[in-house]
Length: 203
Image (tube, rainbow, N blue to C red; front, side, top):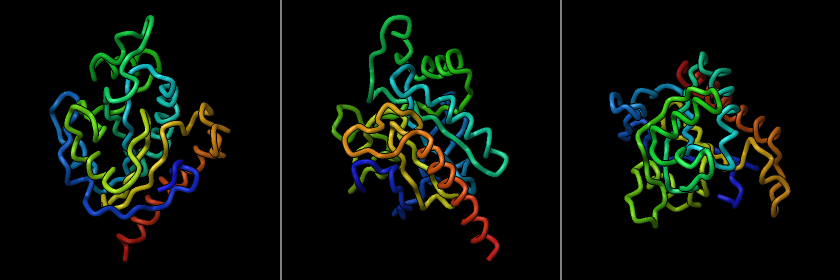
């Protein structure tokens, strides 16, 4: 995978099934990966307030646009990146519940949240199995709001970087994709997985 995975995101064929992995909802009452088998799912590692948090609204819009077609979003709260917020948002990253409350209060969105996960492979905490497998032999997760779009059968993925959907990273280094292009790329990835798997299921 190149340094900026969203610029020309290709389908990755996984050596495992995402929907077979254990991941509880934030309230601990259901296994939300297993529940999504048969749907296209966007997995997004999130926090409370950080430079990328304005994507909450855009991701909610994507969810609303495609959910009736079999598309789901799971927000996976983590403290591995951007641990400290400041000023009035100082407590927004203190717990996964604070992160969810912050999202609802300041961004007016209502995405499904998972339990707290750890992501970094070299950190003091044990990375969740999902992120261990996703990062095996490829680039590590770079920060909050990296987007993983998973096929209905759970064995294919398209990966989009954390600064997509905002122009914060546009023209930084060798990055050439702005937020509008990134949004179109993500929509195409969702639509391709929905269409591809529908076609496969009818054969």
